[in-house]
Length: 416
Image (cartoon, rainbow, N blue to C red; front, side, top):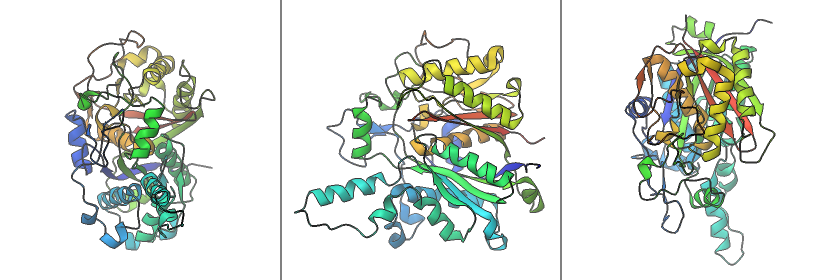
């Protein structure tokens, strides 16, 4: 069976450094940090008092107030980003065969704020069960693609992937394969998360996963730096329109690039820590390259998972050297989490978009906040520190890893 080619025809973003694709790209290439003191709740008693929040965002500018109240923030973010992507793709929604348009979304947690607030409200009462009738539909992670499909009438494959921080990369790979195999012509894919809540911050603090650099939040996310002390929590959404190549050509669509392959693997090692030698990370990149039919020497850029954690950055760097050998030193490597923070289930989507835009514009965004080299990380690797670099990017890969040892990798290629 001949697999169909899959291309990217639309993008949407709602991030801590920009609320549209254009704003997001400007923030990326200019090295803007999205970290700031938390405004969503009083964090004064928390170990970490800052995060990468969405800024200057009013949901009623996009969604009717009555409808917005039925959605947790993570689903609101999903709708806003997918709307932008659909407009960007110039899809004529009414002329589509809606039975062949799917929505495959990623969320690592889902409606955490809804769950937190409903349980706290119940706990503060006299034990009488008074719950919002939208409690369950607002909370469940699969509601985001459901709402998007209802808005547009898309009746194709519709579900959410949940693999912690790899969730939206998993969603993209599922979408890729549904189109490749002929089960859909178009899929709205991506991911969203809204975990900057008391429960989210408290939980990650209890794990000692977050940076506690409260005196200087903007430089707290510092992947590969010797003085990194944990990741910075972010929120938002990224949406990508994937489309069968022939379908896109037939309607005269603008094509950003091809999604040529995806890889999956498991560390099978630890609940939260990566394998110290990066074995799972190594395998997922090899699987992705094989799936795409691309040799290691063809890769120009890698958007690393690069969370700014002491163990993760070292393991992933080792994996890259293992996979790419001497060519590793010719690749532009970066971590856009240095700017956006870690968007958990949405990370794979917004970082894939960064890779797509690097191909589109011939610019690799920087890894900001680097000051001191880590002796455990190969100094010959080009991490694109602190300044964006111009480069003709023909092939870019994006890595995303999640608690539980879930690894996903996607590869984008400039169309010939």
